[in-house]
Image 1 (tube, rainbow, N blue to C red):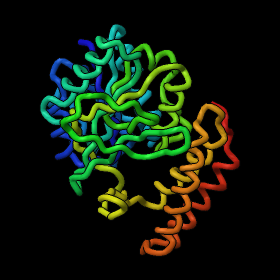
Image 2: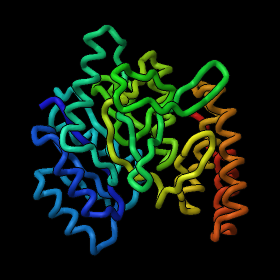
Image 3: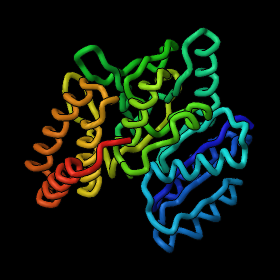
Image 4: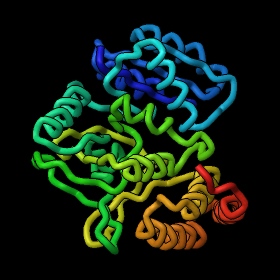
Amino acid sequence: MNLATVTVTYNPDLTILNTQLRQLPTDALRVVVDNASAPDLREPLRALCEAHGAVFIANADNLGLAAGFNIGARRALDLAPDLAYLLLLDQDTEPGPDGVQSLIKAYETLLDQGYPPGCAGPRLVDAHTGLQHGFHCMTRWRWQRCFPPATQTEPVRLANLNGSGSLIPAPIYRELGGLDDALFIDHVDTEWSFRVLAAGHALYGIPQVGFLHRMGEASVRFWLFGWRVWPSRSPRRHYFLFRNAVILMRRDYVSSVWKAWAVIKLLVTFTVHALSDPRRKAQIQAMLRGLRDGLAAKAER
């Protein structure tokens, strides 16, 4: 056994989660950490995990995505100290029948070819629209999403790795001490990616491996020099998105290019929801509260 998968759940769709667990390698150590889902879901969720032979951890409170991943990863490393890899998954990601094995094989091929070690992730395909979420790439002055074809075998060097589907070598996880629990959710993967890069490691996108993924409560298509995906988020999610973006802007290992891009994205997000969201009042209040709390929060890691 050289792989542990860690899935964090909160009121999951059990049909989607069943598909995910069924598609994971049977020889992997599978860990599911539940963040205090609704009472009527807890026993069916436990039974589902037991049916798939997964280790099930039930948190009494919702500790957030980052803490859930860390709890699961540490349990996995306690159970199997010689693990080579950790694979982090959201509850609504489907890797496909051979997706995980293909991701590991592609990463190990990179190492054999002399690429420096680091973390890798698949091409994420939006389940609602069928469009790619895209890889996060950066030039000296521009932050952008890259959309390589599924046939591309050359890896994409990334500036930021999408959280779900992240393949993390266990030594790197131990070295960096895991994800930042204080961020709870949103930009957890952003912070982790910048810390990986600051430590001298690399981030890779693997275009030929695709995972089906759902982002936000729903997704819509829009045209901006090509079809794009816009996730629909609740006011609570926008609170964390704005708060955590401000926190990251105050950290010196975070790219200045990302900081400039984040300001623009926050302005666009605020404008779109203030003008067109049926919940505009709640959305505006949540975003402004996130900005305030981000400015008041400690910026250290």
